[in-house]
Image (cartoon, rainbow, N blue to C red; front, top):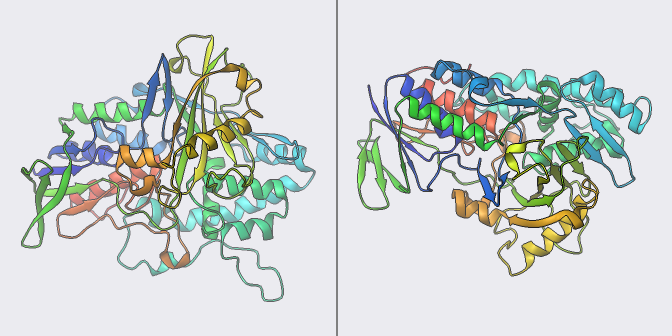
Length: 474
């Protein structure tokens, strides 16, 4: 039985800690903040509750596996999972109103045909068929196995693009895939928004990012009653059940190294904690293309209409928005959970608006009045999804990448995106086995990248590596 020091209490760290504790190790988690969950946070005021990070769960099988492997109670006994249907509603500038069913390819094709015209849905279905090739070629090396030393195969883009034109060159970005293959503004907007929602600029992300809408529409979108913070609560409780020790308000300033091996951690108060293995789950340096989230939390008077969609996208620009007042309208995601745990009573509603934006530094979100002015614009756009929004608004809370940086320690408040193949490996994350020996890396800054499911997978990979295995998450 070894001593394990885990730096950070984000979801990847929690998943690792629970698995290592089951292996019989003595696990201690050191977290600079006063709570766990990392980016999976919550804001509460006046009886309202809001998710401040991820709000939907994709690939819930990752957390089902975690709970099966670490205790007797399965995931569904610890949290209440609800399949979101429709998966999303989309409002376009030309007035088109489109609702896409959850995890139904035939249903999606029918909805697209009805909204955009016969044959358009089939074009999207053919695109998802090519995206499935990306899933099949990268599922194991990107999601099920730790990153190998030879990453050259992952530097080649696996998307089987349709090559058009005289030179028949493959598109360089996923935005170029949309323009060339989808050939419809509504379809290209759907693709771009999905990629943006993962914190990627479609004008920079490689064609392999086509796997993201494939995953969502194939495996579905799920909500956790009480908000995604309830999932963090459940994983934390599982860690405590397994005997994991937590020390909050304990900032780690360095990894202690002796003879080329990690032997513990040094804390901000000058003390050292010895360990046989160190797992680093704290945020690392972002990739150049990592983006942030601008979030507006709305407390609304009046009940949520029964027919309101859980997630509505009001489409604007297909690119990250810098908050400038004279730029194009932003694309705003509007989340309206049907969840009485989030409101003080049935006569109120809690809604979350989010926009993908550059991180702090690329834009000064702390500049006086800048964030509030952009929030005004975001709320105005969201009015298309929430009729009477201005009259219903009780109060709002604005959160920028600068707030994310302060609360989680992520540089610039950047939100790591999932690892992607192609672009000569530019979108791969740091390997799970670190330097010196005995140091392992987990969470969004490490392989396989950001997102709730990916954090859970990285936890499984690291636990397997510590046990002497090959680093598989299966």
